[in-house]
Image 1 (tube, helix red, strand yellow):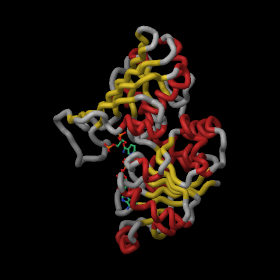
Image 2 (cartoon, rainbow, N blue to C red):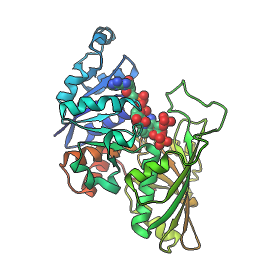
Image 3 (tube, rainbow, N blue to C red):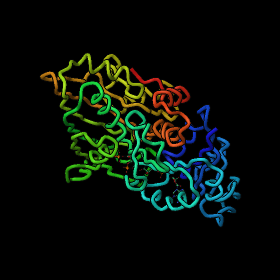
Image 4 (cartoon, rainbow, N blue to C red):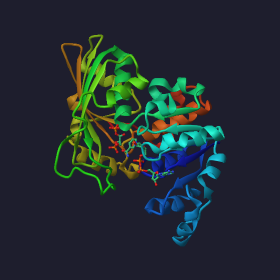
Length: 341
Ligand SMILES: NC(=O)C1=CN([C@@H]2O[C@H](COP(=O)(O)OP(=O)(O)OC[C@H]3O[C@@H](n4cnc5c(N)ncnc54)[C@H](O)[C@@H]3O)[C@@H](O)[C@H]2O)C=CC1
Ligand SMILES: O=C(OP(=O)(O)O)[C@H](O)COP(=O)(O)O
């Protein structure tokens, strides 16, 4: 069993912990929090040993009825690998500790590529991970872009990509963030960070991205255009998506044309936390013009799509499963991830 520590038990960390616990070849040896919060009670409820960054806060946790297993360093020493899901920028500060203890570590998309020196996506570059101590799972939007670009690049070749990201403003529990009544260019300059981020995994792709933030909390929406190298048809492209285990199709017959209806759907499917782990490509939007011009809309659930990628990244860095397809199959099966559509 691979012993996994989750440093930072927030939006991403709590999902990764549950996903690790569901795998047949991994166990959660501990999760960390900095302060008492609802998530600390969830860690207790799940039975995950809870470690804290600052042991002087032990009494505060224990007064709240939450047992503390030790400090973060003790957790790291007990682990084979750590998933760092602390807020963006904190992972960089944690890296020297992982280096000192000789631990493998996975960082998230809020960190720069340079923090790990290797950026990861299971379908695109799984086999390259084994020689690395550190990896970074690219951000939620970049993960969604890499999946769809890589799939079409493998099938038809991709000459160039132009994509616009309509980003959710905040996660559902993030009550302090906005905007409440604005569309914010994020950034006003072009490109947004997503194109260069895609290039950390797929360096040969010609891509330019633009992004803006709208006042919603659930899912980003992408408008994507790609020029393909080979002529194809809409039916062929749909087949590629149907055969990809992490690209789902929002079928026309469902009548779903928004993030809100898609959320209701994942909720009704009984997905944990309503998570859409796969890309949600809108079937009706998939179009091929003049044989080589591809268009689509896709929804990306920001809290969820990076979770299975973190699980595959654990196996890829540990070198325990050499075949990416086998790891992806194991991860999907343990999560109950059967792509919609
Ligand atoms: N929320 C999202 O939509 C997505 C976030 N990411 C990335 O994942 C990372 C984590 O983001 P979230 O889960 O949203 O953050 P979050 O704020 O929900 O959770 C971070 C957790 O880390 C804990 N923490 C803070 N400082 C710490 C420290 N020094 N040591 C240990 N724990 C500490 C906090 O108590 C909290 O539980 C970031 O790099 C972010 O950019 C990536 C994809 C999507
Ligand atoms: O990784 C994300 O977005 P990104 O792919 O646009 O960088 C997550 O939605 C976190 O974004 P945030 O920086 O708005 O919290």
